Length: 301
Image (tube, rainbow, N blue to C red; front, side):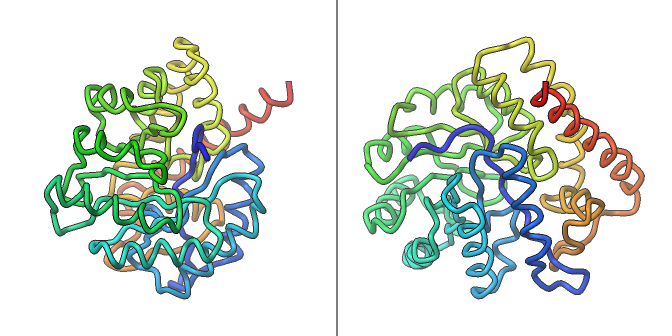
């Protein structure tokens, strides 16, 4: 399996009362498939995985697997703060039909690099699912360094990395490991075009929840090496990238989704988008719909 192109880190729709909204979930899945998204992540950080009950995790993942019916890969977020629990969660995802596990560095516990090496080898050795490493130090409190990744790339069950540090030197170091069995994915929308133009295989994106066709086109342009076209298209998405960072993820993207009738709420301690950003959210929703229509026109032409 090779994960590449435009991959959406799906938000989890809730009702205004905070219940799982599976009807909205299926609308989101349909939009993603119709717009050309090339893989999906269920129950990642954008999906508020830490706020999900086991039965909800199961329902979301089972629904996504059934919905896509093998047409694109489904990755399950399975990374937890303990290795044994991560293995257990990865087995759970495998039983539900996931194609691969997206395994974040263990949050909060701040293991050493030796600990990270042992952790990922143990999860991969268990063999439940192929593993995509996920490094996002701003959320987890630890950084999976390239030298440690070098000790993991040869493992046949470790198939790639999602790197969310926006440093070009970090991406260059990781791209040295890219080969037929190991894919390198950006985890940072604002620098994804730069990463793909440098050789990255794609992006696991937050913005593609609400810009699925536009992010697919960005990936196509950048991965084809069309520098001017990719940079021009990327420039048109800057307002969206900036808005996604005005408050912690997934608050901004869920504010846009709610305006599109895909879910209504978040779960504490996350709170709705601050009123000061409401007007911007409304303007941006209109702009994003225009961008998506332009992508459909390009495909139709």
